[in-house]
Image 1 (tube, rainbow, N blue to C red):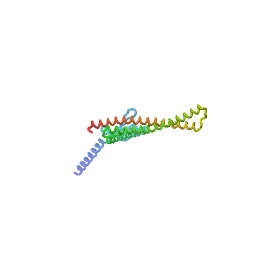
Image 2: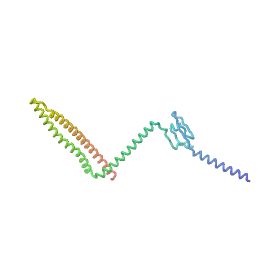
Image 3: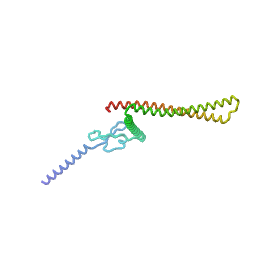
Image 4: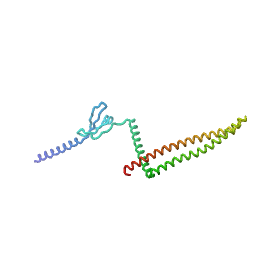
Length: 215
């Protein structure tokens, strides 16, 4: 009787062990990969080739449950980091633009208020150019006076004194500098005007989108 009981216990233990082993095998994962020639390999552990070429994690039924890309070369890692950094920067720029758009809409509730603010910005450049223009006119007149005096002395066959010659050179440099400054200011004004036009267009687009969304 004891012998029969012993046999039953052993059989039960064996069945439990076999079931556990079968269950473990059924849930076991293996690795599958292809070499450059397209040959498929399976392994219960990762090999250097699997890491090099990339691999799939598959269950006992051969179903892929996860894919791991191949290891990147140093050059590819640098390129991937550069691309990731650029994408992050682009995303940050987009968030900044969205925030600035909301600030602009909140600061200028109407198109008239926005247009007035942009006109004031352009006028600042015009005022600077106007001041330079008036200064330039005065300096050009002074240069014309110096040149007239020099011409009178030349007609009278008189030698041109050094102070007059130096004064003409200095005045010409002053006039040239003011003309260059005025040109830069006019270009800055034109750029500000073009920017204001683009910003007004963008403002209108944002308002239209806001209205379309019920804002």
